[in-house]
Length: 100
Image 1: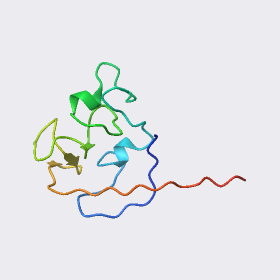
Image 2: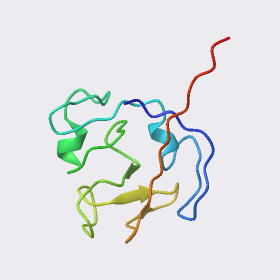
Image 3: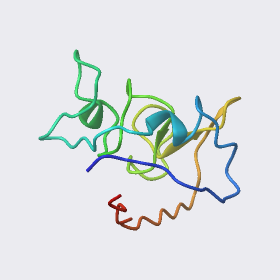
């Protein structure tokens, strides 16, 4: 699945083009056995210990190892620092494209 972002609301940090989930916008979902990220020298899902919409293995990973800080843990970069939340919730819905 490809990540295409719409509106955002939350409390964990700014949603800008270089931070948080926006950095991963338009990326394919990568898993341990299906490397779809554009970073050719490593499978980011293996390196970060969790499947996600990776772009250069950075900026956020809400499917990492729980309560493990650093590269392999659940993390969110808000533009200033990396955060390691104790709770996350992601809601995804399918949007039907309008045919013109």
